Figure 1: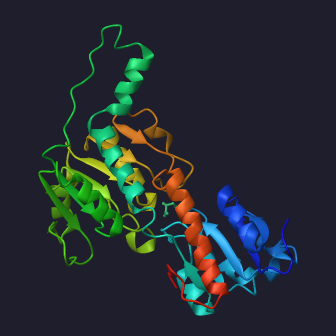
Figure 2: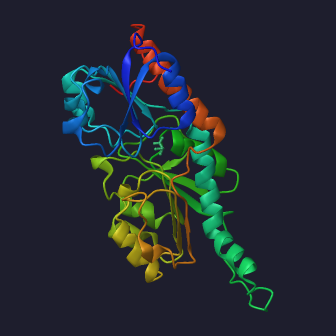
Figure 3: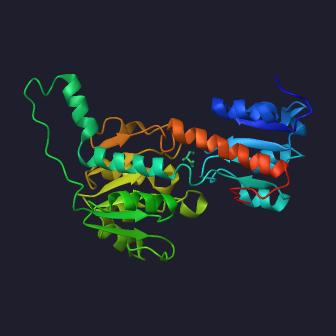
Length: 316
Ligand code: DGY
């Protein structure tokens, strides 16, 4: 039951149930489906002063323009690649996201995907379940993580958390960013092709969006080479997906562990038949603990905004 005197907001969703419940305790919540026709929004929705959305939907210029009273977009994700940030800035609309609270869980999944891919964990699991091992088939030998050169593409918060986890076992940790980062013990490689050549594994941890589109291209994939592995917990668009699939099919790289895809939730079917690929349905931050912390942070940003205070985690 919502109280009409509470600030009106749009839940652009469907949203995570705990988040919806917390929003409903504070606001008059108008649910709007992420694929709704924006030219036919009911008048009550047009009152909304806040929009709560999530990573894969974000907020387009069109939804910002459709809501004339919009003051703030509270995003239930760290990635804001689907938010038209410049449009928000131009209209004086605030944007908040959920950094930090999800760093450890996303880094954990990156490491899990790395081991699962290099050690053939998913393919070998299928072998046990299907009975082929019991019938005498021998699993293929695989590569190893220990001693390998781990290349982190994007040494931000999540990239650093991944590096910290792998430091005890890696032969070396190197990274590529647009600019060299201060205060890190890891080796910076300025040229992306050199970076790929010198890495056994590339873990993609950069933020998404147009600036990072197809950063991992065919040349970089070839530079990684036939023993190389790609792990992606960032955004699908950061990799040239077609080039990666072609390289996987030709065994020009050894494997890939992928939590994200260019057109989620659609995953190129060519990947389904590949035993040297491990696939996840975008689960980086999807732990009970972290999703609750993310929801609490969305609410904290909205509460701060409506109380006229500094946003805890502003983007704009
Ligand atoms: C994030 O927070 O950006 C996650 O990838 C979920 O969208």
